[in-house]
Length: 281
Length: 264
Image (cartoon, rainbow over all chains, first blue to last red; front, side, top):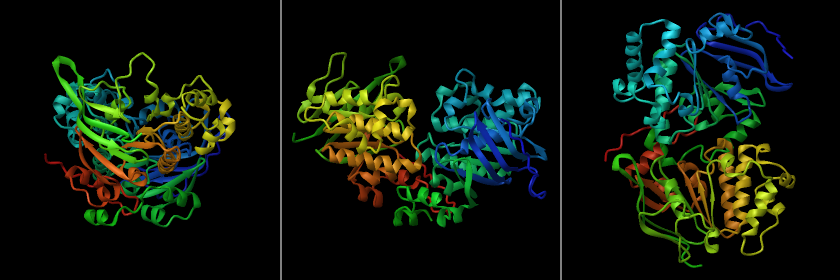
């Protein structure tokens, strides 16, 4: 069932700190989930993956992280740091995952372990991957919590996930993802479970981290409003394929594919009220 | 059948550990007339879900009263609830949890039809209203997507012939492209059935699409209320302004939503 037809990596000039996905396929029990996905994820940019549930956007993110389901067959190519991730041995992927390529999920309360203190969640993988001492790891954890703007970082380290709100938890899981200094961050619907006001803060944080640290961020979301706020480029997925890909403004303002047009037309109010728009600009 | 739903200074207080207590709903008074579509918005933790639960008797009031068409709504106990109160129906956020996974769609809608005081529409008609094919009656909830399940839950609520539908974040678990569609469908189905609708959401953009009147809730209180367009275009309270500003607009300009710190 494995269809490993690794095509030559396109563009030798592509930055090694980014991810280059070409012709990525993924099938489970004969069902095609990803059907030849091409995607460029350059550093210092937010690459948006849009589409409805079942379009394959989450599975693309998972495959880049090597987290595809066990019974799936992956083909095509994912290039990162001069290496090919498709078909890489589990031991090697383990060295990259969490260290070079990190991921945050939709539900922060499910992404964090309920019975491990925040300190543990921020330092365990750091010590494993980077081999730093306990006290160094703790210092780094405090620095991370400051970076994601969690109040009272030293106090927060002693606490447990249930003692934080959803927005704070998502900030903490972003901190955990950043602990080892990854080059790539995959954010799968990071603000879908949050209130709009909290969402605004998390989106700002992601944008700042991308700009300050030069992270290559893959933002998976079905919310085109969120996409429009932070993504630099938007790839629209449907039935396991990228049907449209381009700069944010072009894709949202001047969609070419009928599916993208339909998605944008389905939005309740994609222009916003006039005075409300003026108030922001 | 005159005054619809009336809340008079209703409060709900939760007891917490160490003798603390939390007033989730704090003296809320409101009225929803028959056939009205009202939106209730606010951030998580503002008490909007507790309010919805109090309206259908799932929470005990610590003060004030809730009545529906003149009949007081008491706390739902283990006994069968009064016939007159069966006309308040709730649609929950998570259709995966609100439909019984072990019973067929047809049976679940039949159950609701049985408590309809008048002539309930046929199951096929109900399914047609929510754009689900009639063959669904013999299938189980797991065979449907989230959006379809939520539409089935709507059909089931309508089957009982409700006078008041309460949707507690009924679209929050759906895709953005589906949210507007399901919300509009819910409004249309409610209006056609002659029921009023209390639509709870944190998303003002969706509420704006279907509600004629909006209530904005914060820390257990209704802090602003008015016709939808007025609230949207000319919000008075800083809290409402902040909620509106935080909505990301799909304009392709890459503007991050603003977050003003709220000064109390």
